[in-house]
Length: 484
Image (cartoon, rainbow, N blue to C red):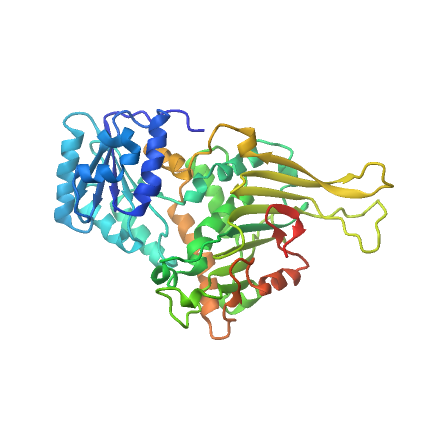
C-alpha cells in the first residue's frame, strides 16, 4: 500500500532527462500530481526537466499547465545529456534549486531513446553526478533495456561502472499495476490456493497481452523490434514469474527478485532450430503498408509461445504466452486452467463435456478475478452448468480510482524500494529465453509470419498450435469457453 510520503532528509530533486517527450506529459507529471494531491510526495520535492528543446522554466510550465499544483516545483534546462558541458550546466542548475546545507537527494529518470542510455549513464559518471557523498543518487531506466542478451550485458556493465546495483531501477510499468501486485496478495495471503498451485492440480497456464492498436507512427522502431522484444522479454515473462515463483521469505526487493530469477533460470530454453514446434509468428495483413516498414518485412507483430518451467512445482505444465498488435480486444489476462476430475461420477450425454475449473486474473481493462466451477441446475435430473465467483476492483472499491502504475513506481523509486523493478540478472535471464526464439524466427527453415486480419485474435495457425496439445485459447472475459 502507498501510505505516506517518503521521509526526506534534506532536499529531493527528480531530474527527468528527455523531459520534452510524450512520457513526461502523459505519464510522469500526472502521476506526480496525483501523489502530490494525496500528500505522498516529499514536501520539498523539486522537478527539473532537461531536454534538447529550447525552452525556459515558464514555457515548460505552460506545457504542463494542466497540473498547476506542481507549477512552483517545476524547472527546466535546455541541454543534451550526452554533452559533458551541458551536464555541468545541469549541476549548476541543481545547485541553485537545492540551495546550501543538508543532504541533496536526486532521482535521475532517463526518459530517452534507448540508444542514448549508454552515453547518458557514462555522462552521469564522468560528470560525477552519480556520487552520493551528500545524499542518495538513484537512476530510473525505461524499457527496453538492451535489444538482446549481449547488449543488455553491455548496458549493465556501463550502469555498474557508474552506479551500484541498488541504485539502478529498471522500470517495467506492468509491475506497477494494482492487479499485478494483487496477484502476489492473492497467492500468498490466501491459504486456500497454495495447495492447488502446482503440477498436481493445474493443467496449463495462459498469459495474454493483446492490443487493438497497430504500430501507428512507430514503423521505423517497431520493424527493428517486433513483438518478442517489445512484449515478451519484459511484460509477459514478468507476469509468468509472478504466477510461477515460490513464496519469498519477505516482501522486500532482494527476496522477491531472487524468487523471480529462479523461475527464469528454470525455464527450458528453446533451440533456434526447434522454434517451429514451440512458437507461432504472425503479422497483421496491412503491416507492410505502414510508414517506415520494409515492404518485404518478416517482423512478427504477433507471437504465441509455449514454455516449460523445469522445477518440482511446474514440471509438465505448459505456459502458453501470446501477444499481438491489431487484435480484437485490448486486454491483459492470466488464465489458470485446472485439471479435470480424474473420474466423473455423474452421468453425461455422449457429446457432453464438462469444462475444467478455471481461474481468470484480469489485469486490464476489467481488473479482477473470475473463478469458474460446476453447479447443479435446479430441479433438473442432475444436469450441471458453469457458475462464477467474481471480484471486480471497480465494484469492491467504488469511488476509489485505481492509481496509474507510474504512481507506485515513482514513489517506490523515491523511497528506494526496488521490489517492483527488474534486477540486472533478471534482465539477462529474460533475454537468454527470448533470444533463441528471435533467432529461430529468422532462420531460412523457419515459417514466415502467418497473416491475420486486423480485429481477429491472430493467425489461425495459433489455434492449430493449441489443438496439437489438445487445448484451446480461452476467450477473453469468459475463461470457460474457447475462442472463436
